[in-house]
Length: 277
Image 1 (cartoon, one colour):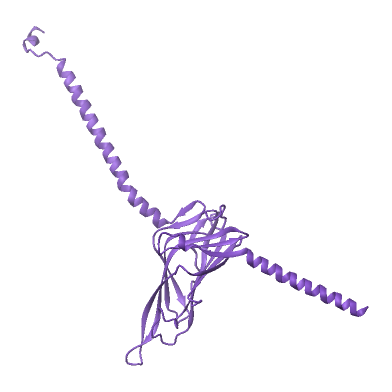
Image 2 (cartoon, helix red, strand yellow):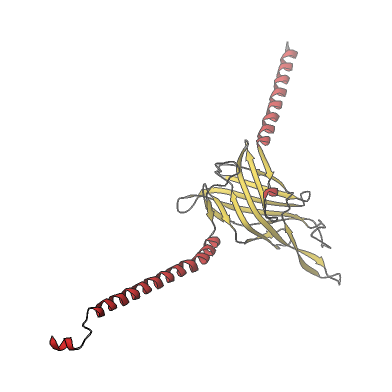
């Protein structure tokens, strides 16, 4: 009887363990990342999507370039010289991410995890009382022993460049952030505090509140794009106003001529008529 009791307890434990593994696998399977960069007509632009329960919950479209400083040994074999490696996101990058109601993130890796870009998002209430989302952290992991971009590196190895107290791309909740202009961000590297530059352009991002699958919500344009749009439309507006002023001036002048001509036609043409008057 005692042996049967232990057998039953063991079986229950195994079942619970298997159930836990199944639940964990199911949760993992419900969140998946997709690289849709092949759909972009711009060869420099990448498209990444995170889906949860078969529905899009995070979308990122952008062109990204990295400038990474690294040390090489000088010809004298003593001094160190700093050079720059220039990288961009490849189309075949791997992606994983997490969606949440208040925080989300996306990790983009390539070259067998030699490089990884991590972007973290948070939704919060601004000082004005409005709900907004923003990027609160960016990390770039890179391996200077990777020979494609780093040659003759002194003391090669993996390093992590991170942002500090970041608050970027603040956008009203429920909208996507759009910016065609180039924006740069400097990350501080674990490699002797070197500054790694991340330049992004042609951006559209939405990490929360996506209502339709694979479709961004209403766009919120960055200030730079708004300024450029104003600079483009301002000459048109001024030209329209100037043209309108010219038309009004000519119309008034034409009306004045007609009025003058009508007045003169009513006056006597023969001076003798003035005498009779």
